Length: 165
Image 1 (cartoon, one colour):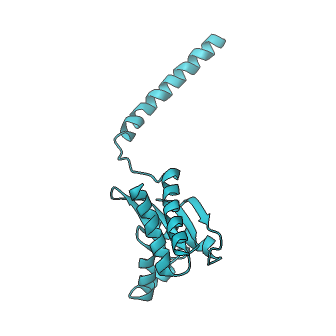
Image 2 (tube, helix red, strand yellow):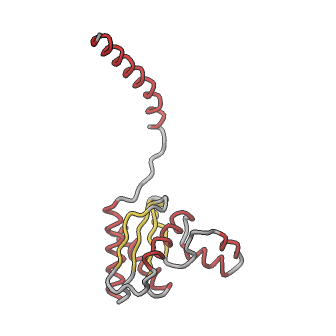
Image 3 (tube, one colour):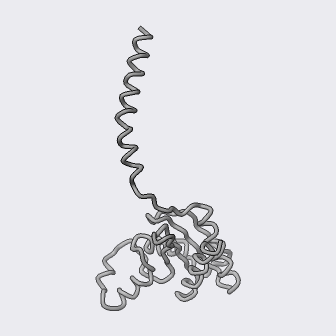
């Protein structure tokens, strides 16, 4: 009985594997896209932190993947805005999911497109920038320091650290 069971199990396993083979060959034809690794996120955060430290702008730094999911969060000592631990990830998520700087949404809300305010759950403030590699958005960085200009400068320094790394 055990031999028969084993041969039936083996036959079932083989037929299941055979059924999956076409799916694997189809999947191999799908395009691959770059992803933001933890090591890359660390380089970005280190670059942003170095800029913030050099300028005396302690901040919160958030790095997310292309889906807006968190990879890392850094809260520097003496970060100026306590709400930054919520704002920085929100800015990063907004930039990742809208595929544009979070400041573009701030501009839209203050300008010709106030309907953007109905996009609940997003942070419509400067400081979130998408991270692009080979023409693809792989993630985003969000910064909450003290001013919108400083936030964007720190974010740009972080992205530059990836390109120069």
